[in-house]
Length: 247
Ligand SMILES: [Mg+2]
Image 1 (cartoon, rainbow, N blue to C red):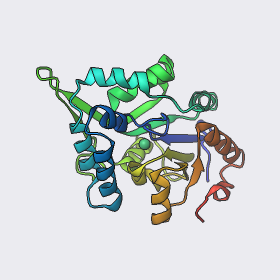
Image 2: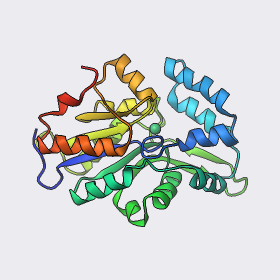
Image 3: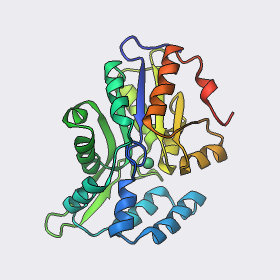
């Protein structure tokens, strides 16, 4: 494995429930949409494969009829940052490690939360690759606009990672260590694209990794990710397999 001289690693990360403690879309659905019971039913359908993430997720969001700016206000009041993320992000900055958010959520929500929870300069330094939102000015109704509408995930995270690497001139010989952190079903598409997948303790992604035999290492907060990545970079990636929990 060759480490780039400019970037020792690249960290791709899910946003909702990974960088934040609460999933914004779940929060809206549960509190001002059709509620937790119906969301859990759809979530089960997504988990057992009878419904795609893209269609189930759209159904949840369609149950939220509150105007979009109000949704953002509600989220700014209720969504919290992972307690280790700020430290992790500043450490990455000091080591010249890019942090890229790869999200199935909607850009304006992520942007507002990132600015509010991490700070103004974070929005300049952390690239967001996500779905968008379209707001009808007259009726104030809004809809998610999927980045990859033909993908059952709505946003094909694996494709976004590949596109990022190509855009930045990485190929087989010059790609640094790649990491991904996530918590849910939409992260499965990204899981195989990096050298190590961090899966959040107690969340759906771990169930999937075990079922699909996708190697993962657990984390509780970004402090754990920082500690493991530090150790891995020091060993130039040679110790990555030591961290895999489902060998
Ligand atoms: Mg998530």
